[in-house]
Length: 219
Image 1: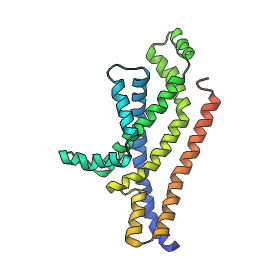
Image 2: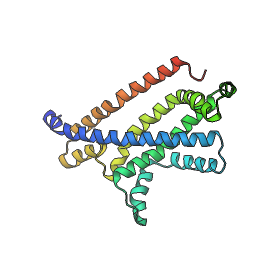
Image 3: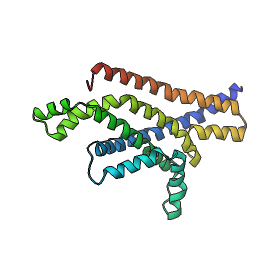
Image 4: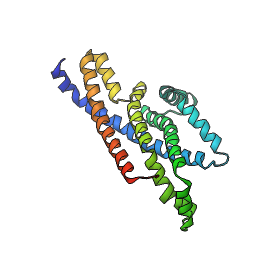
């Protein structure tokens, strides 16, 4: 193990880590937005949209992220729509993550007891207010473990985006191996920087899970 090389290569991996975090942030944020919208549509069976959303969920969950990103990057360019690798990565992560988030949040919405809903309506809340202040907070708390697992999953899936020349951690590691033949050093740095990202994230998600359990949401 060449420690001098590791020290010299660390700034490249720091920059790649920031790119990975940037990808994951937008991918997770957009997937949550998509997930909430799709979960509401499927839970409340919005006419003409339910089957469309179910089709999207099945398509997204049953095709690999790599194929989705290749379609965005190479396929759309055939019809004149050229997107850079970073944009394709965010869209791909959001498209994949949205379906998983939708199922997690739908499970939370369906787990809220009818008594909670009836109580909210009986005190004069409108259906929208009942959803905003009573149903959704409880559903989100119930779904927190699944949402957290999906966030970790999407963070790790950013490694796939290296296939379209986005300089995130996996791309830089492969570049170091290919150009400098420093396989051990590259893999060591790759593991270290993924741990720097994922370990605090995992601990924070565990903390959120404990907080929601103590609050007894959805009881």
